[in-house]
Image 1 (cartoon, rainbow, N blue to C red):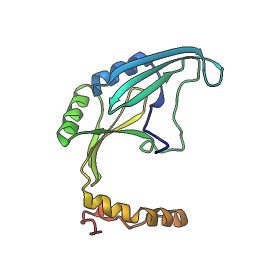
Image 2: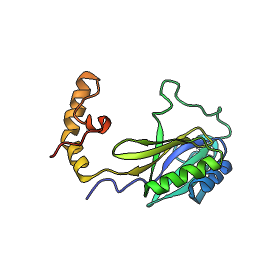
Image 3: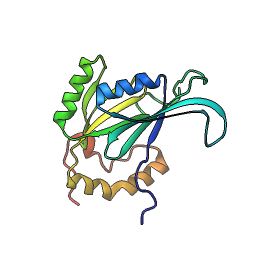
Image 4: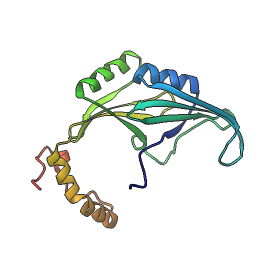
Length: 181
């Protein structure tokens, strides 16, 4: 039996819990499923009032946020590029991806993409809290999966030694076909 059974929830900080719920409902059709508020943090006992909200992102997955009104204004890690930390959510088709892009734009959201990553196509945008969101449509073939699986450890080991991008899966970026495995 596997140790882990999936993601219970992923939690981020938000500036305004109500605005966050309404934004995710409006733009991404997420259902608001739960709110928890306390004056003390249950795990540490610290006095720190919060609102903890939970949104259903489908497939039994929950996206949660904390509003922390007594803490300093939220920021981001200045040493991490803006594109690095993001939440990638799966959509079922390119049609859905493109329709959602148009919906976001119509709602005043700036959208980047779609970007063709060979394995999937993505659009990128920011929520009202400054969190980068990616919507991705998977287009990976079994051949691609086999080719990537074959070289994953070689790539990781080479990276660990050199800190340079290994070229084992260059086909992802140069437009060539994946090798037969």
